[in-house]
Image (cartoon, rainbow, N blue to C red; front, top):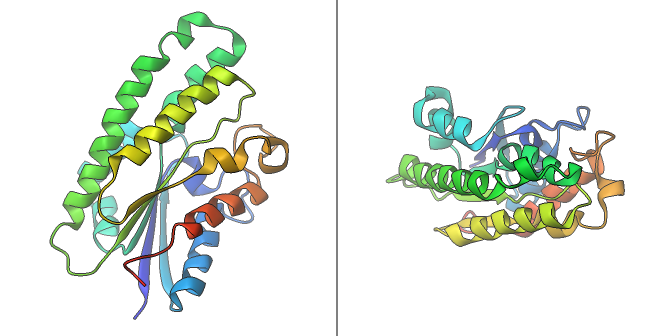
Length: 211
């Protein structure tokens, strides 16, 4: 029978930092094929630097995105890091002016992501085939407690969205304390090992009701 997997999101979805391996999405696809015991077609719509506002615009107005979501049995979404990272970097650098804007930026990001998930369900509404939505949580690449606090707040929000067949991969816990081994030389994006960890956390969520 076979399934279709659509990956949407930011540079985590494109695989920045591990160009040869392609990031987590192709690894997760292979894991899904093993678990589901059938072929999984794959479409990657990741965009480097994508923010939640731009992803929302793509989902609402880009026919290619909407068609890919409509035919997908498996959807992964990585979004939010580019909304928050500039402010988290300011916290690391000690800029209180920018750091003071984090709560507002976090609030805007939450509203965008809430609408993104709502629109995913709206696009899929009425289709007879089951599907799953998997959100990739964010990690904190900066050795800063306050930046980590906001990352955890955002992840808690992702968990709160809920919905049928919706689950969140806990990337924060997997990366915490292992940044040196899992991050690329830029200190921000995962390396090939880090992307395998993300794929593993997604795979651990299972594939029900697909199997």
